[in-house]
Length: 181
Image (cartoon, rainbow, N blue to C red):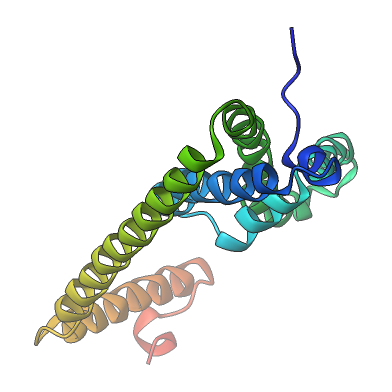
């Protein structure tokens, strides 16, 4: 069985068109999968595609050292490192190898056309995703701007504050009416 090579292998062996086309296709496919559908950071995806094997080893090292992190830091580290770097690296590693294998086997002209098509698809998908996000934010802003919405929220918050103050006064054996003025 032949192990799929990295696009960096083709870059260093002088087959730069296969390397560049593979990188572009890998970035576009990973972008479509992660950034648009799951909301991952584009910077994590770009790093994942550029680092390839090195990024994969960084991910393994992170998992090995994760148990040594203090528990109060785990959530922040997982949010930053795991979701914005490790997951894109693992997906980009697999996708990059598969795409590089396909590009190396097929005609470079076919690859160039597929790059153009995927980049166009990524641009259209990004535009659609941005439009959907814009519409959702606009709907939320309109909902918040409805008359009476803020006053209702203030009334509920004041009632909860008053109730907690009265329960605190009772627990301190004080008169709630005098204590909560």
